[in-house]
Length: 585
Image (cartoon, rainbow, N blue to C red; front, side, top):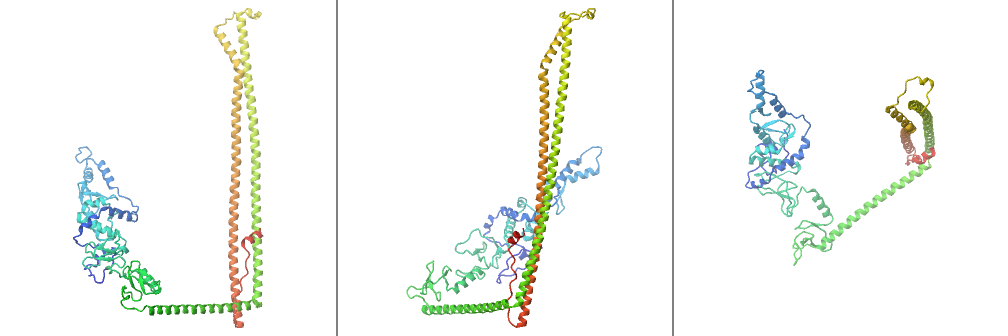
C-alpha cells in the first residue's frame, strides 16, 4: 500500500506511536476553532476529481446491471401467475428480479433506495460506501474513492456521511490535492495538523503561515517554526548567494527592512530607504549626537578597503600579464613551427599530392554527374516523344470519329427526307383519288363508258370531312416535315457536341497523365541526384579525414626525426558547391 508522503517532523517533535498511521493518515486535531472548517464544501472534491480524473478514467467495459435487471424483470412472469406453463424456474427468476445485492458485501436488499448506482454500473450499499470513503480519508493511494477506476461522485458520498465525517473527508481532500513538496504541517509536537495553502499573503510576514488550531507561525521555506523578525531562513539559497555578492561589493543590510544598502560616499554613516540609519562598519544604529555608538574609525576602514582594492587590482593585472605572456609565447612557437612546415619539402610534396587527388576526385564527380544528367535528359525526351505520339494518334482517332459521325448524321437526314417525301407523295395520291371520287359522284366530271354501267356513287358528309382533313394535312405537311428535320438536326448537333466534349476530356486526361509522369520523373531525378550528392559528400569527408591523418603522421615523424616542432598544414580547400555545380552543368 502506498503511503502518503509528508514532511518529516522537527527534531523537537515527538515520534508517533504508529509510524504507518503518521505517514498515511492526514493529521487532525480537536480544536476550538472547528468553525473554520465550515468553509470546506464538496465543490473542492469536485475540483479535485477534475484534476485526477484524466488519469483514473480508463476504457473499461461497464456492467449494465440495471438494464439487465430491468429486462429480466420484464421477461420474468409474475410469481402469482396462474398460467399453464408456470414453473419453479420462472418463480425463481421473478424473485431474483425483485431482489438486488451489493457488489461488495453480497448482501441482498429488497428496497431500491438501500443501494446506490455508481458510474461504472455497479451497486453499493451505504455501509460499503462509507468504508470506501473512510479508507480514502486515511490512505492517499485510495483517494478519491472509486470503483472500476471511476471516481465516486460527491453527490453520492455526501448524504452517507455525518457532519464530522464530511469534515474529515474534505480535510483529507484538501491535503491530498496539495502537491507533496508544497504540503506544510504544524511543527508543534502537540498539534501536527496539516496547514492548507493560504488564500492571501500577510504583508508583514510574507514567508510565514499560521496554524489555524494552535496559532503557531510556520516558515514556508524550511517548513519549521517561523524565524524572528529580521532573521533570514537558512534554506533560502538565493538570498544567501545575493548576500555573498553584496558582501564582496561592500554592501550592508539594513537592520529594519533587511534590504541591501550601498555605501555611495566616503562616510560610514548609511541611510536606508526606510529612513533607518546605521554604521557601515559594525552595523550599529546610528546616534545623531555621537555617531556610531561603538566609535568605529571610518578612516581606518576606508583605508583598509582601499588597500584591498589595490591588492585585488594588482593581482588581476599580474594574472592578465601572465596570460598575455603565455599567449605570446604560444603564438611565437606556432609561427616558428609554421615557417618550418612551409620550408619543409616533405610537407610541400604531401600538399601537392593531396591537391592532385582533389582534382582527380572533382573530375570524377563532374563526369559522374554529367552522365547522370545526360541520362535524365534522354529519359525526359523519350517521355515527351511518347506522349507526343499518343496525343497525335488520339487527335487522328478523334478526327475519324467526328467524320464518321457526320457521315452517319447526313445519311440519317437523307433517309428522313426520303421517308417524308414518300409520305407526302402517298397523301397527295390519296387526295387525288378522293377528289376524283367526289367529283364523279357529284356529276362534275364526265363518266367513262365503263363507269356508266356501275351503280351510282354516293358522297356522304363523312367523305367530305375526310377529304377536308386530307387537304389540311397536305397543307401542313411541309411545315411538319421541316420541324422533324430540325429536331433531327438538333439531336445530331447535341451528339456532336457531346462527342467533342468527350474528346476534349480525353485530351485533358492525357495531358494530366503526362504532367504526372513528368513530375514523378523529376522527383526520381531529384532523389537520384541527392543520393549521388550524399555519396560524394561522404567520400569527400573520408578523404579529408585521411588527409588529416596523413598530415598528422608526417608531423609526428618529422618532430621525432629532427627533434623540433612542426605545425600541421591545412588540407586542400574544396571549391564552393554552387560554383562546382554550375561548372559541371
